[in-house]
Image (cartoon, rainbow, N blue to C red):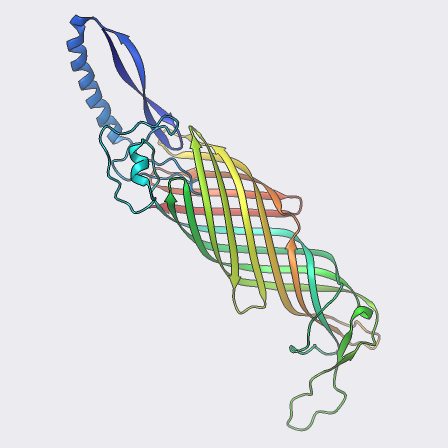
Length: 377
């Protein structure tokens, strides 16, 4: 008589996964009775061993090791092995979680919190400039800024950002997140200005100031000045940010792939503005240490579009033959020069659900570094 004996094999899929592979053995009728008893005892020991194994999840969120609710076993997603009896999933998210578990798939803990630190150094392209000019005086705030054909000689931004992120798995393999943070730094550029192209210029009011009265506002009229100037502009960036993003993740055996898309807007009283559209694809392989911790290198391609608007006043000393300074009130829009960059990253995942991720984005004209640490619950 032929009988099947189930052999346990640990498959490292995502974090540790377990599945059972059938092996065929030949048994005589006389041996069948004691083999049945042996299998029953062996299966009992095996189940006890599996329950002692650490429960770890399989779907990556920022490629950090995830955990499962207690009592939920892990299975190979290529060969889902439904539980012998239906399991009850008592968490609100993800939708469809109980159905996925009872089909033999593992789920991560649905909620996560993490802290993210980002540095970003990049070249920028001047896309729009609106200027007003003053000779020996700063143009008034209420003077209309007019489009001006300024040519940027060089332009660069250097910023850093600290963010707090919360996320939730809405569906198995589909995650949404929200971050709140702050971005600080500066945007510097040098523009070539031909003053003859300016339609008007502001000069001090020649009339004397009356006693006890504030200085008279500048007089702005048709421009009669000329000359070519290299004007350095250094604008500070200090903005609060909010980001909404989506992640999709898929894993097979030790390999995974993930897609993400996010939009960031900023707000503050400062005269600057930063908005970002970001999307990327990442893929990598997990390596597991004897303690169950995971080391995950990965690579990918990232698209990022950072629109920066800066406003302020720039001054060029001794710009005119009579020693007067040139003051330029500006409203300038900049766009990052390189939209695409390569990704190289490494994450460390721990069996308690905590994880740390390091990532570097590099292109010809940009360097971006990301450090994050998080926990799932």
